Image (cartoon, rainbow, N blue to C red; front, side):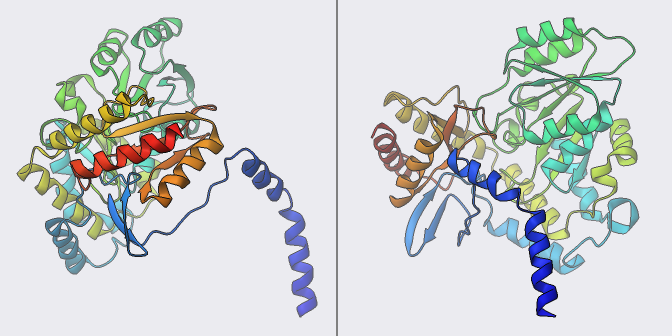
Length: 399
């Protein structure tokens, strides 16, 4: 019996002997990644008794431990149990799923909304439903990986345009004029690695002018911009110019899940064609309950996003004044351009020793040669925390 297991291990090793060279190559290029376990979540945590400022958390509004949000999650857990136990189209749709969708649609200014298991699933489910093999997708060069994966799944022709450049988009639209196909423009409102803001008004005007659909990923703008955290589409009053507004419940909403806001007829199409919706178990009740709790907080405290952006502006100013390259950041996401992969990791490690978690972001998440520190400002960071962190970050980068 032992001999048989030994033979099996040898065969398995032969089948997987192609893996180690790939890992070795990643290590040699400073691109190897590992998952570290942290004892807590949030923008300010304790590790081995030491208080650490965490600038790698997406809990922008510091709501993951909010008492009302947790109470709403518990209430849903007590009422419905730990899981939805089926897909939405079987028996997985619960009253709280529909309640959340109604509230999201109202908050986003659209007729309807549809909740998915994650933001990734929302993009992967929606984009292939909007465009197929005979269609064209125009994508900002820096859109999220989930949007690119969705474009590949759709089979549509993918045409990239220069980042946040309406002139480049206009040229692309003219280069590929409409025939009998559908055309879809996709972008983000707040870009996840650069922290900059898309020129949404200009892009929406081009979409209307060229008869193209427009989908905007508001993952990092939901909760942090717009009235009651309703996002930048609402802030710029573009609801009638946008086909799909996408968001997540894992950033400012501090939980898990994704959603899209759209017309009622498009929602019906997605229910019937979005594979990431049809073939996935419905999000668990506690997750939905927490999201409803977050919406209560945003309604009762409409200035949370305003305070967050004011704090981020002050922090960015300290870094920029010291000569650090924060790119075109205009949000709570503040990159510091380093360039070299190993240097970015070394600076991140040095800051970690000093009680600052600043994630080193490297290719393929960002373009080659643009490794950086990615800092997320949250409401857990007070002004004195940000001033203290700025001093340490400036010293580490300059050294």
